[in-house]
Amino acid sequence: MLKTIRGIVVNETPYSETSKILNILTEEGIVGVIAKGAKSLKSPLRVIACKFTYADFTIYYNEGKLSTLKEGSIVDNFNHVKTDLVLISYLSYITELVVQVIKQQMAPQIFHLYISTIKKLDEGLNPMVMMNILEIKLLDYLGVGIELNSCCVCGSTKNIITIDPDRGGYICSKCYTNEIIYDEKTRKMLRMYYLVDIDSITELKIKDYIVTNINRFLNIYYDRYTGLYLQSKNFLNNNINF
Image (cartoon, rainbow, N blue to C red):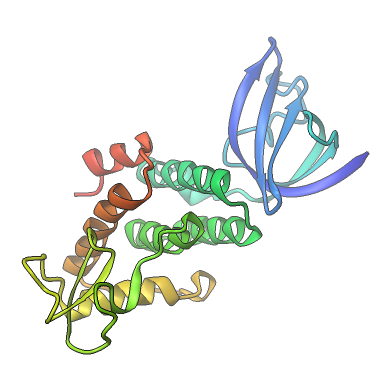
């Protein structure tokens, strides 16, 4: 059956001397496709059968098995991202993260959040902020969302003085022991990350210390609650996210 799917190549593997196997992430999940002859310089599939290609792929669909790529039409080249080594590193991480999340729960919205985030990276918005916005939104799909409405210990909505990654959310003055104090601006911005519609973001004016605080918070939270260890994130933390 001939079928057209819109998606992005999240993984490519050489197959025989001239072909590739592609994993294409769509809003319905990952579709495995063989691109016959795509490694050949003269192949019409060569351009689209590459990692991070966002396109409409026409395939001979084979449910439950490898489908075969017939042709494709690029939707967005993401030229800015693909020519910047730092942005490629961010893209590699959020791709690895999204793939791991959909292994636990597939939802069309995850695909749309992922594509929207890449578009904002390509538009030149702060990559750490965009990464963190996506990270906090994906926590719900992992079943470990942060408590951002009331104290995660007693449920009080009054006298919130910090937010703690180990305890899982806001901490009020009565339940506070010796947790790190994240100031009110950081707490409010973290909540805004969760609530904001990524597509609506046109500019980011956030103080550096708040960006750093939120990234540090989410690093600890992911380590504490998700059980995910992603090499691409480790690379970011060691080489780019100062």
